[in-house]
Amino acid sequence: MKIRTFTVGMFQVNTYLLTDEATGQSAILDTGENDELVRRLEQFEREHGALDLRMILLTHTHIDHAGALSLLQKRYDAPTYCPTKDKPLYDTLPMQGSMFGMPHLDRPQGRVDHWIEDGAEIPLGETTLRFLSTPGHTPGQGCYYDDHDILVGDTLFSGSIGRTDFPLSDPKLMVESLRRLFELPGHLRVHSGHGPVTTLERELKTNPFVGFLRRERGIEGPPGIRWAPGT
Image 1 (cartoon, rainbow, N blue to C red):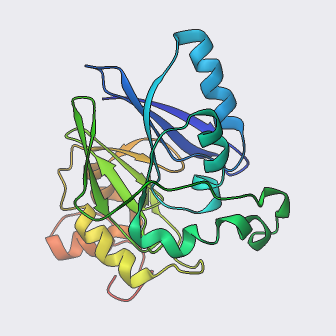
Image 2: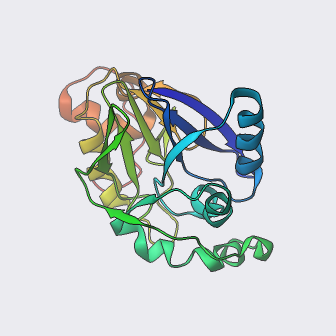
């Protein structure tokens, strides 16, 4: 699977164009909060030819990751997949701009065609994307992965993790989600909602927010930050 990154919007969110190299079928993962991704995809098509866009995937439904869903669907009317557990947050999308002090970003939230659960498998050409539910940053935050790459939204960053002090966040759930996430193979390349690419192995060894996992597993490394009960 080929992964191209488009960093967009005032929140500098990483959105992704995923392409199955065997068939050319593509998916968009996350949307940004304005029309920048649409404009950049149109420019990409002018330079590289039309996309065979088969789906839109959402990791979660904060405004910076899903606020432009309706704009993206207007241009690319592809079926959209979203974590079931994030529906309470998805329902607030039309007013999240005002909630964060930016009422000009309020707009209809777009539609979701497929609500997905932990363990779902989504075919993209000859690639199978698996869905891992990792709540904590939001009620339904989740990750999509194959044998080489994992797209984690705001679950994990290079050197950090997603915030757990927002409405509907839950630090206890984040602790358990990180335990599950780091059961996956360490070679997986981690593509986050913000910041650079890393790997699960690198984060397990160095990330200050997963020191509790190093202690639990007897892994050498910095003790880390105690940021929630159980860490």
